[in-house]
Length: 211
Length: 211
DNA sequence: TAGATTGTTAATCGATTAACAATC
DNA sequence: TAGATTGTTAATCGATTAACAATC
Image (tube, rainbow over all chains, first blue to last red; front, side, top):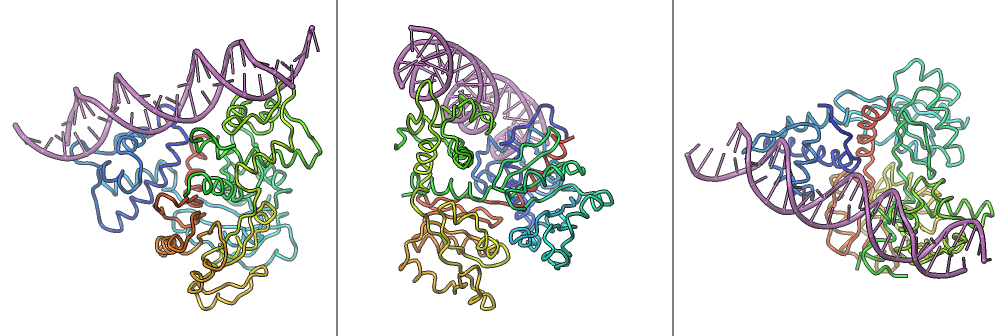
């Protein structure tokens, strides 16, 4: 199960896509798939798919292919989403509130259990069953609850300080929506969602590749 | 200016980060920077930075470094954000509305000029100065206005059809927030923001790298 | 068994890093 | 001029693709 040598980020980023397609196969009651067929739907080469999966173990059967349900479950284990993950949102502005209402998280094993802000006008407001809490109570909250992930959606200028504060209070994983780089300590993992960066990349590709 | 050979995606995705740091240098009135110094703040190696920039031309000066303002402007040209980009949001649910209110886009050269939905309850609602328009009027709107980019934030099950519709009506670049893969025609560029995928990657890294 | 398809090794390709000559 | 730092070529590293033996 545990990979012998460090698996590259490139591989990891493909896993959710496999997972997504396997899920839709499951729904369609398809219980067998070959790397060749998976290649067709994902756009990755069959060879790459087999290489990727074999970083974690032999999930297939020669001459047959992969059992969809088995592979699906194995990937969910690899991604660590077989156990529910508890998360909080820090920063209940427009984006934070929208993310709180975003139902896609919940049924993928990510359970939102808290949302925090420092703005007195926002604190106390109900967002999708959750009351926005005072960020001053966050420290206590984190002591009393086992939280795995934090979504950071505060303003850019308070992002670095807030991130530090989260880490000091035991948070080890941050999904960062702020347009700033958080260079954190070794044992903290950060995944960036830089919306403006994505738009810029898109803009480049529009001019160069498109047309 | 135009690169001789195709520049890799890896390079392109680093450009917004350079751009961001150069902007903050400009604000601090720093007008000179070496690849070595840029390496310190971005985390990329100095060698890589020089390689990246030289895909597009020699923007530096031997023995001196790079002029911050010049490099900043050149990168904005490369990214195509020296000219304002006009964009629309399709799908005015929670996420779509939050993105419409997200001010960071505007001052980076991305101007939101329309937001559309099919839901009668949402149509007509004001979101940040813009009235949510009926998606049935989108075709006409795109004929009368020069739109560069579309942000797709509809529900996953209508994503593919809506994307096709956008392309048929002349849209060439889509920022896709739907948890689905849009495999589009050659001349359309799509940038995916798969929030759940990011959470899954984070979950993996939390268990394997973190701690 | 014959056919299919994995798991895995080897070959290729591309991206990153190192080195240094060019030159400001 | 001497020192600094780019632009660029060469070396290395890592990731992808191809090939095929293993085996179901």
